[in-house]
Length: 499
Length: 126
Image (cartoon, rainbow over all chains, first blue to last red; front, top):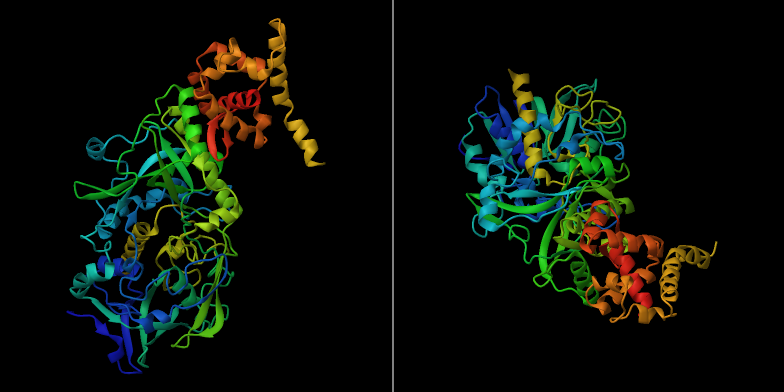
């Protein structure tokens, strides 16, 4: 085909047959379509938005919220081709090995597979998000060019790296919708509909398979899609709405026999000004406070938590970033002068920086999305998000920062000030990653997961879920490249089904 | 239990240090006021111990925060502190503190335990 199809032009009552229906044209949906291109299957992609922002389509995402403040539901995501990549920051880093493990101190943790299951897919995922080569260990060439990283004593925090999706001048990082639209249009076995909102996943009467999809447009049209297999890829919030609202056969919603759909919502809290880092030896390498370019790669250093420290200290993942330089108050200057004097270190060049971070939340079944009685313009029930963050989440990150301070002292290279203690203080500067994780969690046991290790909804033979909503735990790494890797794994599974 | 009871118990180790400081002065033939003993011109082991902290006013500022933060429970016994500092340079003691996880938070600053102990002594002596 040579163009996207406009669902608003499809006559009401039309029935479209296909082999694979992909609901959603975000990074997961587009990755699937690209990966299954030119295979002997007919693919239909149904994207609810268009190629540009539309107020009325975006308004379909409105909802209500309770609990701690969070980004409004119509602002934390975008109802446009490309989904979350319309407004992401381009931060890329693979999940850590420990993120996949069953962690005794993290209830509900443990993926059905380990990091090694994704390793074959990360290079391709990095290419799709247009990060550099899949190397997150710090290229010696970067160090040669910009200087050595911070020297830390042995311990729980280590220097790690982000890579960034390519930025073209002032343009935002890779927007899957814009970047891959030409490629999608060239895929002979793909039909991509825009402005096509799936309003119901209709199950067969035995509730063991999807019979068809009901599709509606804001122009009033309604049509039907019948597919051998269906992949739901509308993001960690909308996936929930569609599963719960599709309650014609299973009254509690599809995949929700154990009341799991919508629970365990996770995001990465990004509290600002969490701590101060003093570097005794002067300014630290520029790849800490800002992105740097080298050999076609955009990168930035971060202070990550070692897997072994997570296991022994029972902390959660976190990625600490160095932000702007600051001046210390008199007490801070006294603390630095006294400590450096006692350590026998020259403090003449010492400089201080604010730190920020992205944290990993513990899974919480009460942090959840539920349907409300309010309806959107297509008659779909709207969602309420009940957001929580525990005091322990803050305390565990604080413990990690204290460990960083200990390591700096042990190396005689710096010291740390912990800026925040009380919950109220943390919340003053709280921001969120707008990463929507965990709401259709993956587990081999249907009592503990909505989808299995192949991302198939438990009990439904031909319905799969793609995206970070399937992650049982979120880690501290940003989800986009990781969800693309998981989707590539799903694509391989689907190829097997259609072989 | 009252807060005062808790304060009384937690400050005991610090009082032990101060008692040792005064006792040291008495053994030297004169009962110096602690402030004189630890002043800029004060001779002896304790004076040398505090000299490593650099500017005394800075150390006093930190020490007052240590005491106000009720970190007295982290105070070592003066004799062991003196022995520790007699065995190796202060800088090595501090690195060992950090390596061994003996760090103390004072007004948000993560400091080697020995620094906080010495600063507390400086504050008491001021």
